[in-house]
Amino acid sequence: MDYEAVIGLETHVQLNTLSKIFCSAGTTFGEDPNNLIDPLTFGLPGALPVVNKRVIDSAILLGLGLNCQIRKFNRFARKHYFYPDLPKGYQISQSDEPICEHGRVTIEDNGTSRTIGITRIHMEEDAGKSIHDARTNSSLVDLNRAGVPLLEIVSQPDIRNAVEAGLYLKVIRQIVRWLGISDGNMEEGSLRCDANISLRPVGQLKFGTRAEIKNINSFKYVEKAIEYEIARQLKILKEGGTVIQETRLFNSETETTHEMRGKEGAADYRYFADPDLPPVVIEESWIQKIRQTMPVLPSEKKLELINTHKLTEYDAEVLTTEREFSDYFDAVFKVCKDAKLSCNWITSELFGALKKLHIDFSNNPISSEVLGELIKLIKEEVISGKMAKTIFEILIENPSKKIQEIIKEKGLKLISDPEEIRVLVNEVFKNNADNLKKFLDGNNKLHGFFVGQVLKLSAGNAKPELVNQIITEELKKIK
Amino acid sequence: MTTNKLQKNDIFKIFKLSRMHPEEEKVNKLIEEFNSILELAEKLNEVDTKNIDATSHVHGATNIFREDKRSDFTAKEKILSIMPENSGTYIKVPIVIEQE
Image (cartoon, rainbow over all chains, first blue to last red):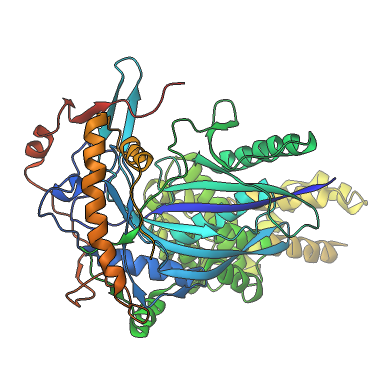
């Protein structure tokens, strides 16, 4: 019997707010343990939560970005569980009233696209971190992360294999970064994911029993964990066994999943509406206001680059991996009005140079105005592409220098006056009488030699096409 | 009307979830006390609430927000000092995962 996998992902996105979701403690990653705590973190008597408005704005923005419906009447709920990383005894989350529902997102794989449904997005607070030390039989708790805002995105079980799961996660990361609501940094835990995986005979509609894989913290591991889990369940089913519904942990060293131990039965979270937090009512006017701030999404931007700017699919893909690339491209294009040249200069010269110098794009020293101006000079034939590269290399080291200054200093001026070039051509002919004779006798290969000599004589400043043309003209005259 | 009396295993489950270890005689007393509370709550079931929404908030306020500004709590050390045990600025607790 053939089986197919049914996969749904739960993705936790940490928002990049300055303060926590229900109190004004900071959210910076990597601070000293327990530096970002306050009475609310511990549920101390009298401490009351107050919602950070930017969390609601971010949730609405993501909801719109993932084509969701936004709930008008929202309540927060307490989810009870007992664990030291959450000293107040419950996590403030949303239960059956998530802020966003019924969305979808498109993933693309080698030209074919598929739609993955989004069941819901809800807001909640993150928990703290514990370091376990078996030697001393103790755990060390750091509550800096407790209360940092999270959006949990739950996908429909529409994903069919590990590659699709990886693509889905990449699109989610791209969108949250594009919208500017999270840095999507998986290494620092700003983006985390759990996967629900089950198998069913091909053609069967009913889902099989699923296992939930937790603790996945990289794109590579998402695929590895799912691949392993599919193989594990397939083996059980092929041998006539049954898959048990359970939570499993992914071990990145062995690239396998194992049963999570010490998990208390089927958890009973005793959800109820948090009486400390008044309901959040989102009127249409609020949604409209957020919609107006929404940038063109990467998928639409990509189509625009292909259709309006006639860029290749590949180039469009590269320029839309990050919003800052796409914004930079728009700004360069605005100055030089040449999409293809803008794209080439950004993706090869600029990206190449930044990579070589280990500079992050966010610290890119070349402003869009300067690059646009440089490309404009190539287009207007004031300088050659080769000269532009020389100027660019100087600029990246000395960003405060002016292009015109460099042109003057280096004597970079394209000779595009035919008469000026004609003088150079005749001088080269005079100095190379032997070769000229051979050439006239029919050695056509020497054409290239003369072009090279003229360019050399002009110190690389003569326009090559013009040199070519004038050599041909002058030869005709001699013949 | 059914009465949802609390059984002994319910209590043990709650204790297990709370990582507490009850004494047998105390459990019996707890069950007795708690069941009388439940009986009182049962009385509420006599009221017909078919068309009434569940009440979660009584004051009627909505949309109470704060702006996204960081301000550090000044008495962090005081909070940490009331923890049963510390290690540096970490809070030290009995190990919470079962050992492999």
